[in-house]
Image (cartoon, rainbow, N blue to C red):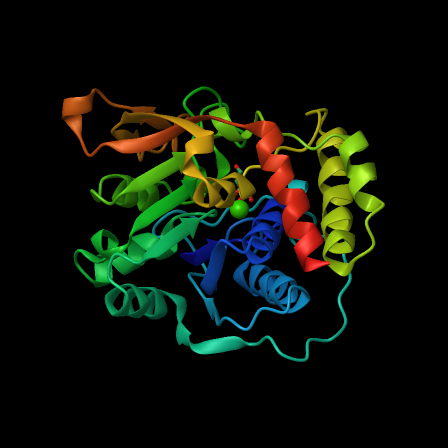
Amino acid sequence: MKRLILDVDTGLDDAVALLLAAGLEELHIEAVIATAGNVGLEKTLENTLNIMETVGATCPVYKGADKPLLRESVEAGDFHGVTGMDGPTFAPRKRQQVQEESGIDALIRLLKENPHQLSVVSVGPLTDLALAMAKEEGIALLAKEIVIMGGSFSYGNVTKAAEFNTYADPEAAQIVFSSGANITLFSLDCTRTVTLDKKRLEAYRKKAGRATEVFAACMDTYMANYEKKGQGWPQMHDPLCIAYLADPTKVECEYAPVAVDIEEGPTYGQTVKLPSHEGEQIRIARSIDIPWFWSLVERALDHLD
Ligand code: RIB
Ligand code: CA
């Protein structure tokens, strides 16, 4: 059983990551931190609480950072909708509410209380992790591993050069990637290869269950927004990080230090691989067993429904 702390900017693919983590019995969610990213913190928190209520989770949900370290906030509502998770509707929550303790303090506390036992998954801007590292020296090294969705070593999705999560807080990404922690990075180069097509979505829709209903409503919005942008089928960025934790052998990786361009300009937020002697090695996902990934999604939804 892998024990997870999830740092999310719940948006539509973050929602699938949360459903997947909650629905796989080999994983256990210890805590969730909602951070600003796709949309503002109040909305990502509301979306996160609604998903956690839907899956009947009892784990605590915390508030993370409401803005990047230095740059002005940028959002991705064009993919995720005004709420950040347009599509599903939710009854007033009976159980899930946000904790008083800040997400940064909770992250530090949980890692110190459970040294080398918790897998941290960060699928939004890396602000929370960077703030925790700044507040508590060496804290990242207490994580069993840190699995991150972010960056691109080809072309970006928010500028030609940069992927959204690193573009939304480049300085935070630079701090995290150079921390020496046990990091596995899912960049766009891997995540854009896993897309949800209409045939698969329609097949899932036939399942009867609340988790699948929420999944399908999220993916209807995601698919429509990708179609509007002429970008093909929606790309399943964030859930790949969860799938990796379920079985790392299904992911092929390479190793290199990764730097982030923190100079204002056309390549601000771009990620580049460095020669191996020039920094801390990061495990970079190159490819994932795609049919196996979808079998996990089906298993998780069946379990939740
Ligand atoms: O670039 C994709 C990433 O940006 C995903 O995490 C998505 O949720 C958005 O946050
Ligand atoms: Ca995300």
